[in-house]
Length: 121
Image 1 (cartoon, rainbow, N blue to C red):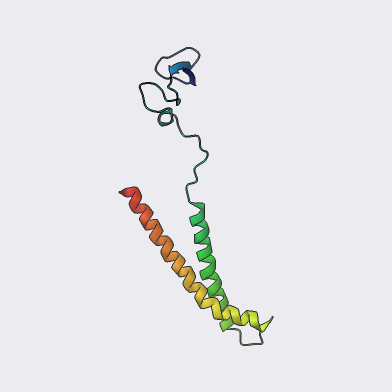
Image 2 (image 1 turned 30 degrees about the horizontal axis):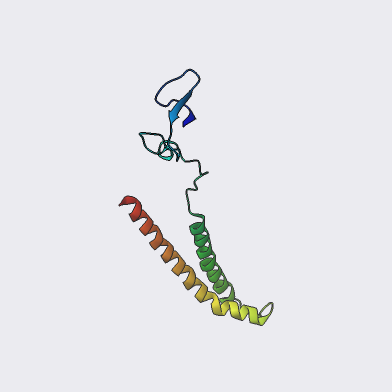
Protein backbone atom coordinates (compact mmCIF):
# COMPACT_ATOMS: atom_id res chain seq x y z
CA UNK A 1 0.00 0.00 0.00
CA UNK A 2 1.31 3.50 -0.79
CA UNK A 3 0.71 6.68 1.13
CA UNK A 4 1.35 10.24 -0.05
CA UNK A 5 3.07 12.72 2.28
CA UNK A 6 3.81 16.38 1.73
CA UNK A 7 7.25 17.70 2.49
CA UNK A 8 10.76 16.34 2.10
CA UNK A 9 11.03 12.73 3.32
CA UNK A 10 13.91 10.58 2.05
CA UNK A 11 13.76 11.28 -1.66
CA UNK A 12 13.63 14.90 -2.72
CA UNK A 13 11.21 15.67 -5.51
CA UNK A 14 10.42 18.76 -7.50
CA UNK A 15 6.80 18.90 -6.39
CA UNK A 16 7.49 18.38 -2.66
CA UNK A 17 5.45 15.14 -2.54
CA UNK A 18 7.02 11.79 -1.76
CA UNK A 19 5.70 8.23 -1.56
CA UNK A 20 6.35 5.55 1.07
CA UNK A 21 5.05 2.06 1.64
CA UNK A 22 2.99 1.57 4.79
CA UNK A 23 1.65 -1.53 6.52
CA UNK A 24 -2.01 -2.29 7.35
CA UNK A 25 -2.09 0.04 10.38
CA UNK A 26 -0.67 2.98 8.45
CA UNK A 27 2.84 2.74 9.92
CA UNK A 28 5.76 3.17 7.50
CA UNK A 29 7.44 -0.13 6.74
CA UNK A 30 10.86 -0.58 8.29
CA UNK A 31 10.62 2.46 10.57
CA UNK A 32 8.93 4.05 13.51
CA UNK A 33 5.17 4.68 13.54
CA UNK A 34 3.99 7.67 11.56
CA UNK A 35 2.69 9.32 14.74
CA UNK A 36 6.24 9.46 16.10
CA UNK A 37 7.52 11.22 12.96
CA UNK A 38 4.71 13.73 12.46
CA UNK A 39 3.91 16.55 14.89
CA UNK A 40 0.77 16.11 16.94
CA UNK A 41 -2.30 17.88 15.61
CA UNK A 42 -4.49 17.74 18.70
CA UNK A 43 -5.02 21.46 19.02
CA UNK A 44 -3.56 24.28 21.04
CA UNK A 45 -1.92 23.20 24.28
CA UNK A 46 -2.77 25.44 27.22
CA UNK A 47 0.26 26.41 29.29
CA UNK A 48 -1.80 26.14 32.50
CA UNK A 49 -4.33 23.64 33.76
CA UNK A 50 -7.73 25.43 33.72
CA UNK A 51 -8.99 23.39 36.69
CA UNK A 52 -6.03 24.46 38.81
CA UNK A 53 -6.55 28.08 37.72
CA UNK A 54 -10.19 27.87 38.88
CA UNK A 55 -9.08 26.42 42.23
CA UNK A 56 -6.60 29.29 42.69
CA UNK A 57 -9.39 31.76 41.90
CA UNK A 58 -11.73 30.02 44.36
CA UNK A 59 -9.07 30.09 47.08
CA UNK A 60 -8.48 33.80 46.52
CA UNK A 61 -12.21 34.52 46.63
CA UNK A 62 -12.68 32.55 49.87
CA UNK A 63 -9.77 34.23 51.66
CA UNK A 64 -10.55 37.70 50.29
CA UNK A 65 -14.28 37.40 50.95
CA UNK A 66 -13.74 36.18 54.50
CA UNK A 67 -11.34 39.02 55.25
CA UNK A 68 -13.71 41.54 53.67
CA UNK A 69 -16.69 40.31 55.75
CA UNK A 70 -14.68 40.37 58.98
CA UNK A 71 -13.24 43.82 58.30
CA UNK A 72 -16.60 45.37 57.36
CA UNK A 73 -18.66 43.73 60.07
CA UNK A 74 -16.33 44.15 63.02
CA UNK A 75 -16.05 47.92 62.68
CA UNK A 76 -19.72 48.63 62.00
CA UNK A 77 -21.12 49.67 65.42
CA UNK A 78 -24.38 51.05 64.05
CA UNK A 79 -27.58 49.18 63.28
CA UNK A 80 -27.35 46.25 60.92
CA UNK A 81 -28.50 47.07 57.41
CA UNK A 82 -30.43 44.31 55.73
CA UNK A 83 -31.75 41.12 57.24
CA UNK A 84 -30.04 40.26 60.51
CA UNK A 85 -29.85 36.56 59.71
CA UNK A 86 -27.67 37.07 56.61
CA UNK A 87 -25.19 39.36 58.34
CA UNK A 88 -25.05 36.99 61.33
CA UNK A 89 -24.36 34.02 59.04
CA UNK A 90 -21.71 35.93 57.13
CA UNK A 91 -19.93 36.90 60.36
CA UNK A 92 -20.25 33.35 61.68
CA UNK A 93 -18.81 31.65 58.61
CA UNK A 94 -16.18 34.24 57.63
CA UNK A 95 -13.38 32.64 59.71
CA UNK A 96 -14.23 29.25 58.24
CA UNK A 97 -14.07 30.55 54.67
CA UNK A 98 -10.63 32.01 55.39
CA UNK A 99 -9.44 28.67 56.77
CA UNK A 100 -10.87 26.73 53.83
CA UNK A 101 -9.26 29.18 51.39
CA UNK A 102 -5.90 28.82 53.13
CA UNK A 103 -6.26 25.03 53.02
CA UNK A 104 -6.85 25.32 49.25
CA UNK A 105 -3.72 27.45 48.94
CA UNK A 106 -1.58 24.93 50.84
CA UNK A 107 -2.99 22.00 48.84
CA UNK A 108 -2.38 23.80 45.56
CA UNK A 109 1.18 24.67 46.59
CA UNK A 110 1.76 21.00 47.45
CA UNK A 111 0.31 19.98 44.06
CA UNK A 112 2.63 22.43 42.27
CA UNK A 113 5.62 21.06 44.21
CA UNK A 114 4.75 17.49 43.20
CA UNK A 115 4.36 18.52 39.55
CA UNK A 116 7.69 20.35 39.66
CA UNK A 117 9.41 17.26 41.09
CA UNK A 118 7.92 15.05 38.34
CA UNK A 119 9.21 17.37 35.61
CA UNK A 120 12.70 17.50 37.12
CA UNK A 121 13.05 13.81 37.94
